[in-house]
Length: 277
Ligand code: PLP
Image (spheres, rainbow, N blue to C red):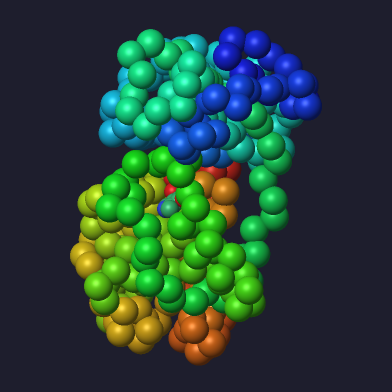
């Protein structure tokens, strides 16, 4: 099981980076998580375009072409089970520690491929927490300390995810986007600097449109979320996850809702088409 590091394919235990790497010192880098079904990266173009945007957001350019990325992914993917690619690009190792961006530094590029863990489709508990993150959450930065602490707070309280709230408005989960069914309409907050433009989020909206599910992108107030008939979390590795309890109170009847069941079937069918295409 090999990983890719700066042009080489190595066993994971032999892949090493400098302690002067700015990813290590400052969290100065970005990443992507790309699911792989049937041996093929899922929504690859969308993930690579978001990588470009994240890199531009931190004043970097993509160190590799799309073809080169695809070639590396092809070398790391083994078998046809569900797996995911994790890629990370940091600004690289500079001669000394200095916040300002050095003139000449080569990025560190790392990719690994891992199996996807089983998804708890019977539903999970979530809690709401104040969104203490920075103001550029649209960048998929490796600097995840706030997300780590928020997720841990959720775990400490017996929940799988923290749903984040900024000034009374729902932004997203600590590592997911949020959907709510309110008055029969599937709602998710609009893209902006306060949330990551999730690839799964976009696909769910696309599939809703194709399947005549009434959906809208608009801001959700915390009290609306608490009264929602259904709440879902979306992400590349957990797909569409129903929330069955929010802050200790059942969502709907405390089981995954009917619209989730419909969208789950549509989503699985979409994946299956790709597996066998
Ligand atoms: N929001 C945050 C903060 C995330 O970390 C993630 C992914 O893990 C998502 C949303 C979902 O994005 P995607 O569907 O592209 O995995």
